[in-house]
Length: 109
Length: 117
Image (cartoon, rainbow over the protein chains, first blue to last red):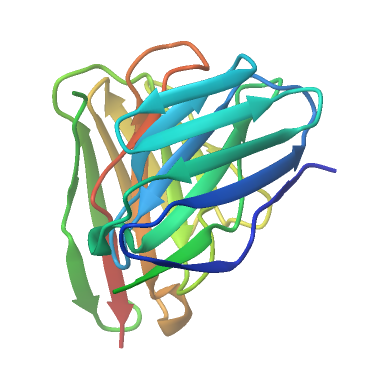
């Protein structure tokens, strides 16, 4: 079956760095997306990886290793507004998105 | 960037009534739109894929006669929850891809919080 795993919850300190991991097993692979979702709001797009390596976008970076079925989202210089759930989603062979359950990130001052 | 508008953002209705939710792509055409449901503290659950000019494709376990989807144009899809019951209370979110390729990200509407009393 298809499966996306990511930690349920993480806690980090304002100003620090946090890495949210995502492992996947899917039928085919056409890219991996990271989304941010604040409580009570819809998800917003953060990043997309289809080739191995690191994609940097400001304070956020996303890494992919296709051979390991692994990705991570790296958040630097954490701010209180970064408190949210972070969703990992993989596009399978049919370009259907398979969603992880999300990682709730709690930022403490 | 691509914008998806969803309306209403919040609706409260009585049990047995029907509720229509609209999803519009404002600055791009979307031949396909997706409808999700999300219960508190749970992940997104795909309900159906809405195809312009043809019937929607429903996920297993989703009643097509209860959740009516119409995709009459390239910029508008509607979801109607018919004969709503309290267990239908949830956060409904639509999304659309800006491009046709699988690498194009989904852009989400702001969601509709439905409360059935």
